[in-house]
Image 1: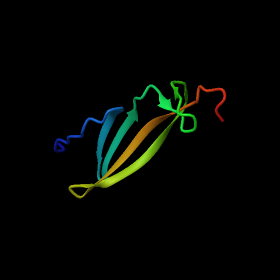
Image 2: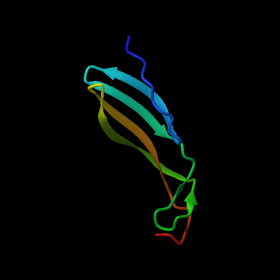
Image 3: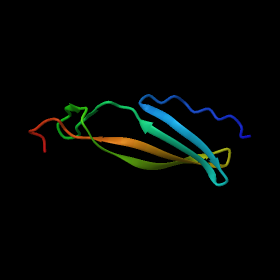
Image 4: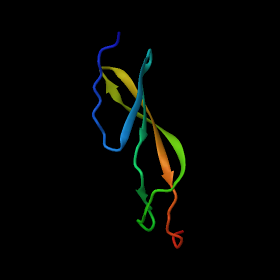
Length: 83
């Protein structure tokens, strides 16, 4: 049995799984935002173009490496005049 691990609640992120391996801890999560602002024109869009996984590492927790796999959404700008 592994010791209990407490992760903070992060607005806009849902924790899917937490796995303990011999070489560290793997955290699987996904963003939950329903829309995002276009980086060019700043208009909000809720139209999802695709999803992709970002891999992150964090400082060790009690000498145990932490790895994150975060699934994020890529949105399409709804402004027809935006490049």
